Length: 184
Image 1 (cartoon, one colour):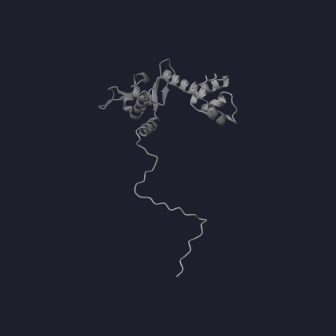
Image 2 (image 1 turned 30 degrees about the horizontal axis):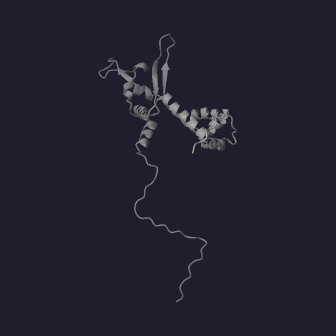
Image 3 (image 1 turned 135 degrees about the horizontal axis):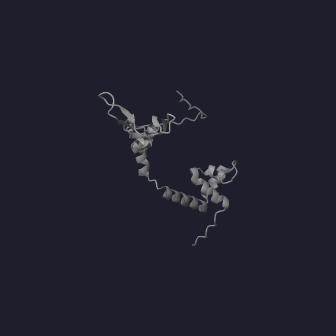
C-alpha cells in the first residue's frame, strides 16, 4: 500500500518550525509564528502531532545540532572544567615582596582555559590613562551548578525514595456498613 505524498507546510507551519528552534518550546513557538496566544498550547500540540510538521521539526533540530556540532562529551568536559578549576591558576607569582613572594592576577589572555570558562564576570580597573586596565576582581558562580549537573548525570542524587521489605495496604470503604457482630 503506497502512502500519499505529504502536503507542503503552510507559511505559518514553516514559521512554527523555525521558531521552535529558538527554545524548543512549542507553545511559545506557536505564538511567535503568529498563532493566537489563547489557543497556542492546543495548536502547538496539534502541530506536533501532524506527521509533516513533526518531520520538519525533527529535520530542523538535527540540522541545528550538526551546525552547532556540540557533543555530549564536550558538554560534560565543559561542566568538568567549571566544576574543578583551580582559582590559584588565575594568579602568577612575581617573586617580589617577602620570602613568600607576591602573587598578582594574570591578564585574562594568560589565564588557563579552565579558569576563563569558570568566570561569570570580571571587574577591570582603569587608571584614566591610555594604558590597558587590570583585573581587580573575578566573579565565579557556576561551580555549584556544574557540580550539580555532573552529579545528576552520574545519577548520584536520587529524587525518588526506594522502599524495601513487605508493605501491606488495607483499603477501607468509609461508606460501607460496619460488619455485624456475631450473636452469642
